[in-house]
Length: 207
Image (cartoon, rainbow, N blue to C red; front, side):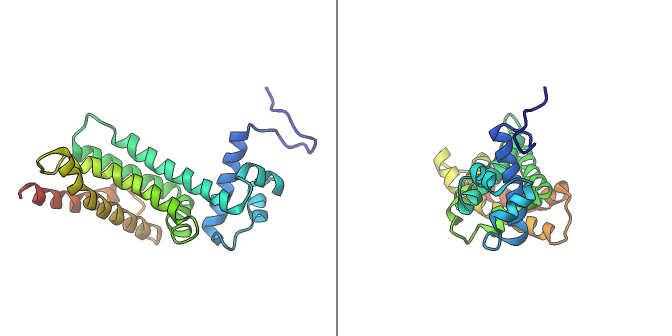
């Protein structure tokens, strides 16, 4: 069945598809010119939609549009890492799969990486980015805690938390290096970082 059309001849898409169209365009615009220099006219042109439609499906303001972009890109990243890590595997395998998913997502969605980790980290929506990063760090800490010594799970989790923050920071640094011209191979990036992490974990286990 052919989707109905409006009076202007534009296909009437379901609201969720139209919102995705607007967010895709906004991510491209924000990543290339930055939030402050971007305009809703730019987003409308990129999306091939009218400006009123961008406001309707983008939350009503440029700031809310950026907020929705941040949440979507963060959810995409966290979901890919969580699904890849899975369960019923060794911790090393889960960490490897999670890191590979992290790098694969960032290297295939460069514009999303730019919005999430560059354009928005110091702006008015920095708290959104901080919350998204905290969720990723928490997921990694859960994985690392299984490999660390401690009198109980809470103690192991407490030891894992700063290590997870360092690991995520290192992964972000590698992602920036990759974006600046380094390798885009998720497997190479994963093995480089995992080699450093596993050496450190071995030393902690020996304590």
